[in-house]
Length: 202
Image: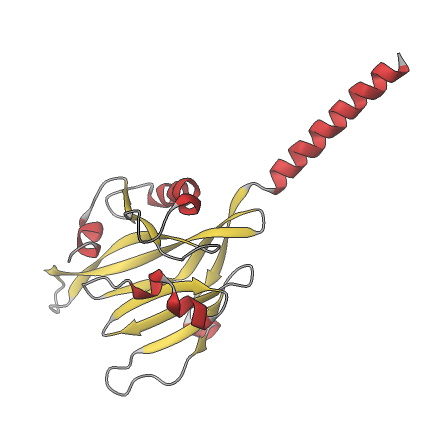
């Protein structure tokens, strides 16, 4: 009887340990800033057009690289600034003028981030404001992280999809870790709106 009770106790204990381990490895979000005040500027701003490059601290020792040139930005991630500059994400430019917001959401399994989500604003020249400047359209970009290359995985139109944040998180969780940069096509998640149309113009 004692041996039977002991065995039952061991099964319960093992199950509890397994549940605790699974909980510790659950997927969650954390946030960092890419605002200039929270980053380090690399070199001086261009005298020609004011273009800049800055390096920002991320999660798990990763660095976020933000480079702006001709009113267009790239965002990449790497173990250091030079590594980030060599990633596929550092070579992707949207054709219209654009900018990224300064909050990055990191999706992580336990303490290991596997994707970032960031809101971008894409200029729409066909929709000028009262001063004749283009209004912008918002889009969420999901980017996969190391190990392996860093590249865009999915786009979610933030205006056409009322639950854009949830869609972007699900895309990150479902696709980022298995996405093959350079082979797989960037996924359009949810309703395809004007921001996605502008971002995918060629």
